[in-house]
Length: 93
Image 1 (tube, rainbow, N blue to C red):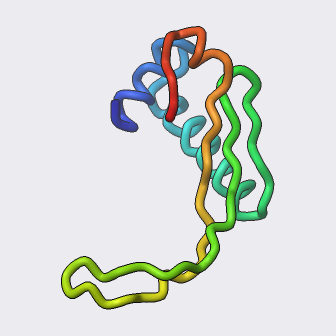
Image 2: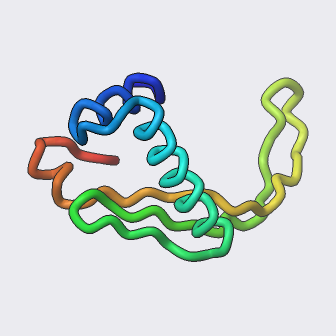
């Protein structure tokens, strides 16, 4: 499912117009992004939790020539699924 299809599903489920559904989705995504950038977590009970995690710097290997390289530290987004996914028979690994 892409963003256009998701907007259409939101419009069908809520009775909102496609334009209003897109605005609502865009606002939701912006709010989640802003919270994560600020270092907060976003917890949607039953659905799951979005949080950031610091990944430390580490040493790796360049696959093309085998030389050692330094991989810098970075912040990544982590999603922990909620109970609704388990109830639907979906497992995350």
